[in-house]
Amino acid sequence: MVSEARDARVSRRDAAGPDPASLDREMMTRCIAVAVRSGEEGEYPYGVVICRAGKVVAESTNRVAHEHDVTRHAEVVAISQAQKALCTVSLDDCMIYVNAEPCVYCCYAIRESRMSRVVYALRSPHMGGVSKWNVLIDEDLSKTMPEVFDPPPEIIAGFMAREVKRALLKSNPLVWGLS
Image (tube, rainbow, N blue to C red):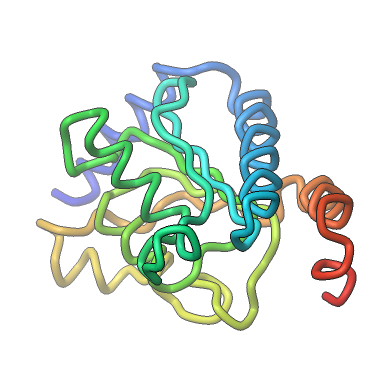
């Protein structure tokens, strides 16, 4: 049953959008601009874009410093915006673009919102929900609670990483020059 839901979701995505390579480049380019804006606004430079059928549904900068709330990570804010805009909890026909690998907290939100595809540029070996904590790719979540979690999303890691590094270094050379 879970497999059938995943197959139907993939079929809808394939039938409903532009060329995946050009869409990925367009959305990640937009995501980079959002991340740079986040840094300029005094936040950590994280940006997120969520799209469905080739159209942007939500985008967000990090909001932790501005809202004095550690739960306002860019991914979580964008997921909330997308759910409200689409009037649904399930974002199974949506894709999320992030300039850096989502942390474990954000990966949980991505999994519970049933996002079908995650594209990110920079790895986060200390906080990442893929490379450090197995949340984004953990199949046990969907096997144990299929009513809450779909199978793991398709993950594209390292996409446009050089462009992201270049943009962040240009916008904030002190912080990114140390990494």
